[in-house]
Length: 162
Figure (cartoon, rainbow, N blue to C red):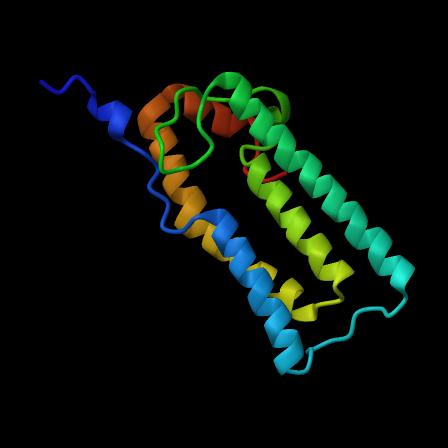
């Protein structure tokens, strides 16, 4: 006899795992910078790019960690291929519906600046499109199925990114 309900098996089923997308684009950007000429030059002044890049890296890690901590406190898993146990709407999730992804974007962009990689910065646009349509759209549809009106109310109150 199967006692697991359909709701306990349903997941967002993302088409791609976000950490792998960011890592893949990071590696691709670094390779393109070495193989092809960068399409535009970033400032050579080391302190400028390290301050800007380092600041974004630090902020990205902080936002990412706050999102993870919020999920952990609520007892809900982070990976989109596991069923959500709770709708997290407080803390950093009261500012952004996707703070973990915002943290990843900040971290990625900071690395691009610190590494002086124009290709990494160009690829952030591709990541944004892929994230929006292959990951976030599926997650939002899943959360609406799972939490109904509570999630729709949350979407009205809190922006997707910032």
